[in-house]
Image (cartoon, rainbow, N blue to C red):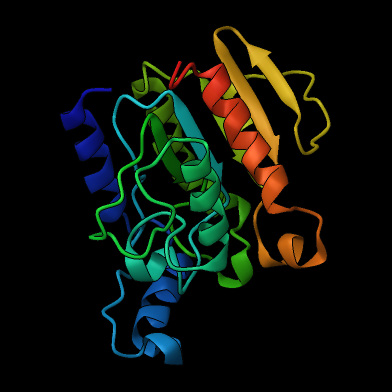
Length: 224
């Protein structure tokens, strides 16, 4: 992916207003705010992908969090899911620091780009099928433009189902943590999503998530 193509795609995402319900929700969250962030200016728009244009690993989530990426303007930044994710990425040698706090914190990813199937924060974290379908062309274009891509890490069932559909994986293997599926030169690796529900219950541990990203770096031959 050439840098100007990535920048153009990111600009289009940030300006998107196709889904009235999502636009209303993300903007409402940006005005009402969470008490802990009342002095911050929220992004309040669709959230572009984050990471280099020549990434060999693409991390795919469900959607931005209302007071996470919808606040900071960077994927998986500003909430506990992101805290887990970026530590795992850093531990695998794929980032220059272990924390993602804001879009201006100096964090740089090495060979990794982070995105989500739906680019706006949805109410109750549940986009409708129509909202998902309106957003999928952005994801489709990203897959086409990432010419160096070797690995997709799917965080959760929603990401896996939609990645499998876009890649034409049939029959689709049952989702499970650590599942690997190879299609052509691309390997899809599945992980439980680092949501609080999964991390608080112990369904996903930091060690488990770390193994996923060590494996992704190995498959993508980053650092070898």
